Image (cartoon, rainbow, N blue to C red; front, side, top):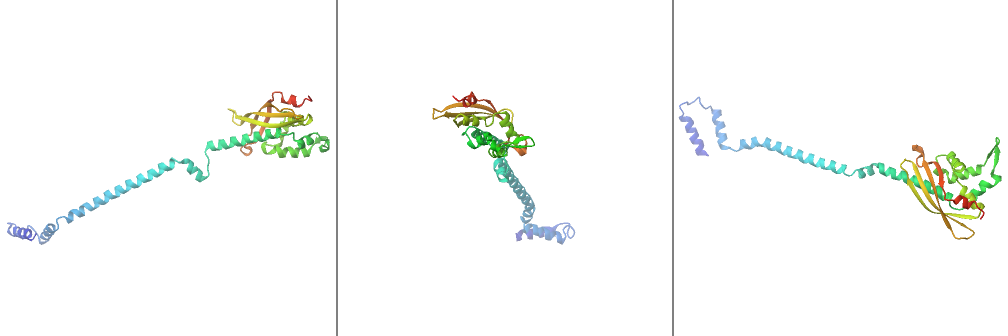
Length: 252
């Protein structure tokens, strides 16, 4: 290195343009460049290396964030569970279960017994009163609201079920003619029209210790479409009992 400096100095001293071609400042810069030939290169490459490192870091961060978003989108049910939400299918299944349970409870009341308390309230005149020239049976209304109320939209629907569509008649016939009733099986189907269901109830009936027989009772049920009446019955009617009402009403 010292030899290079000496040769360079000699060359500058021997040049024909002595004194003015290289200033002392220029000579100092040249000597410094020869002593440290790689320092400038390192300084020049450092910003480039820093830029590359930042770029690679950004790619890694974006890739990791994308993976997390994809993973979270693949598991909507877990997110819904954490947020306490339900899918439409879950809500429909729950609503369907509530409606079928209502039908089952009404049929259990209709075909288990006879319900002696119900029959007494229906037939005993001591429970009847006349108000404004109209007969009332408040005890019967209270009992009907207790056993049927949880499943019907309002009391007028219970009255329609009993007065027009045969509700409680099987209990009355069975009591009057000495039959026992038992509900064996229920098949409930949801129709294409939402909120409309059909059912087939297999009912056992027995008289005076004779062999128990069965009959299939078919019917239709319509539920309310109002949100506040979700799972409540608007209409409940028997369509075909395959002769059961005739059998129970007979003295034979």
